[in-house]
Image 1 (tube, rainbow, N blue to C red):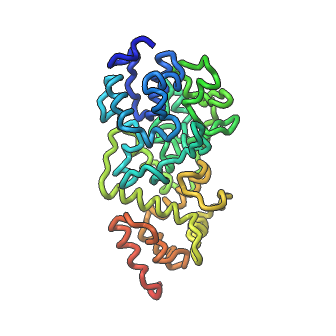
Image 2 (image 1 turned 45 degrees about the horizontal axis):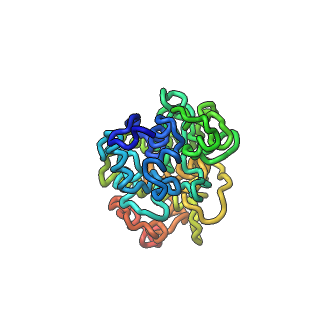
Amino acid sequence: MKGLTGSLWPIHYKPLPDELLSCWLVRLAHGHGLKVQTFCNLIFGNQRQIWNRDMDRLAPDWLIDELSLRTGTPRDVVWNTTLRAYEGVLYSKFRLSGMLQWILGLKMYHRKREGHGLQYCPGCLADDKIPYFRKRWRIAFYTVCAVHKTMMLDRCPKCGSALAIHRMDIVNSDALDESTVAYCHECGTDLRTAPMIEPLVYDQEAGLLLMTASQGLNHNDCESTEWELGKYAVMHHLTTLMTARYKHQHLREFVLAQLGVDDIALTQGYLSFEMRSIEERHHLIQLALWLLVDCDQRLTLAWRDGAIRYSILLKGFYDRPNWYSKIVVKYANWRNR
């Protein structure tokens, strides 16, 4: 296409607030009247395939540089559309492979996605002049929209498919306008019409803590302190313990009893928090946050009840903050119960 060989593309949209890299690239392709794959092949060549990976997590440097050059966007702004922007905020160190703390998994198979790792809020998509997907929608504990206070959704409400916004123009070759990302690529359902579901709240204080944690992700310029990173780490560890299968450990049952809440059926087998459905994650994060509201007192209650052991509270938790270690060290001698 004429004009794509110059330094600045004819269409050089800038990223919208908190927009995901993948969504931005889809909008750029469709803005030029091209399918996503055609656009990428023209610009980057057939040898540089980017849609067979989690681009938002694993965007190569050459892609960041190219988008910066061709759209006239500062490199740090482009880089901030990726999930690496959460390094030092939600996780301490970025990893190329394996699960990344708090980042939802897509379960990639070639260019298809078998994991429901891209969430959305139908209210936000409906309110947008130009519908787009936010970076914070890839965060596992972000189960309630901080704007509309309704449940996030992680699949098409009609066919149940995981979302793959870059595949919409494969199914519908005419779908090249900017609202394309608001539709399911499998059945064409308008995601903006999906039901807005009121979240089930087990405990008001825990619910407020969840909203506080979520609202901190609303801005591109996420700033964090060591304490905040440590708090996210403790929250993740407690969430992991909710499904851990250790002998003589029944922390989840203890918290459920304290809240007077029934358990839900969880997917069997070892499954990380980041690979669970929205329903399971919303259930488990509330149990962990109930403990985190008053970590010292409530963990002590659980320990005295025999619901959790000292060794398990530390097991595999290598980047724990000092304040958490000071709480748990009091449980070293079981005779003190």
